[in-house]
Amino acid sequence: MTNPSDEPKRLEFDTTPEPTPGRLAFDAPAVPGASNARAPARPAPQALDLGPAPASDRAVRTAPAEAVGRALFGESNHPQLEACFRAAQASFPNLYPDYAPRIERHIRQLVPLKLATVATIGDGALETAGNLVEAVAATTREFNELGAADMMAGMLAQATRKAGMFERWFGGASGHVDYRAALGALKQSLGFFPRRTEELAAKVRHAEENLVVVLAALSAVSDVVRAPDDAGVERTLFDRRNIVGQAVQQIRMQPAQLRGLDERVTDLLSRADHLMNVVLPAALAARPSR
Figure 1: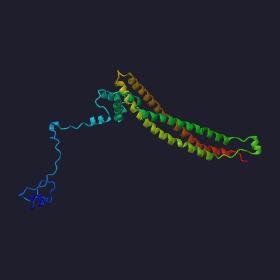
Figure 2: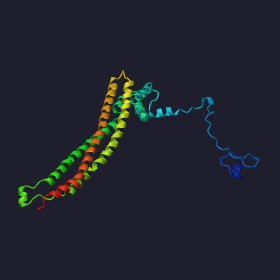
Figure 3: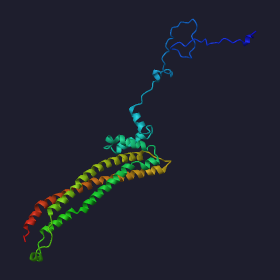
Figure 4: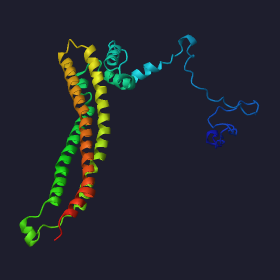
């Protein structure tokens, strides 16, 4: 007789119902007897709730444009800033209306006083001005080295020189000089200078404006701000103002020098035309033919 435990057991199959189409496999099984209607669609995700909106009396106020602008350029609540602005306006009344934003920007950079800022403010303007002074000097030196006046005087002397006895007896040995070609080349060289001086004059005006803006800021701050606890930074502030002031005086001398150079060039160009077209033709025509 067979032992019941030895009888093969009936296979047990998973009685879990098949997943309903449209449902995820790991969703909870459907309850028997429940309706086969599809479950309602899941609600759309909502935005995160970050709390109630601020009340009207606590609404964020927009900062005025002046405060925003001052925040961009530096500290705006320093007690001595306004006094510096007024001092700059009083000392430079003709400059301040057009250059007030630039002057006030430099003042904000200087106040409160910091040695690194005071010692380097205006470095770019100073360097540009120094380079322009050297350029004006180099242009003047080139003009003097050209020796246009001496060259024309030599041509006139050569053309009007009387032949000596030896030349009258045996014929002149001096070579023929093409005065017209020589004077044409000289005029071309002289014509370079007016274009150069015009460019330099425009750059000098711009450099002077930049220096005066820095000087206005330094003068206002040095008149208003004091640093009793740091004598070094205060001394540096006065030294910097003096340096920029001297640079302004020097750059203001350059337009007069350029105008003087232009006048000399114009005079020489006129003399070259007169010499080439009037004086030398008449002098050569009056020379006795051999």
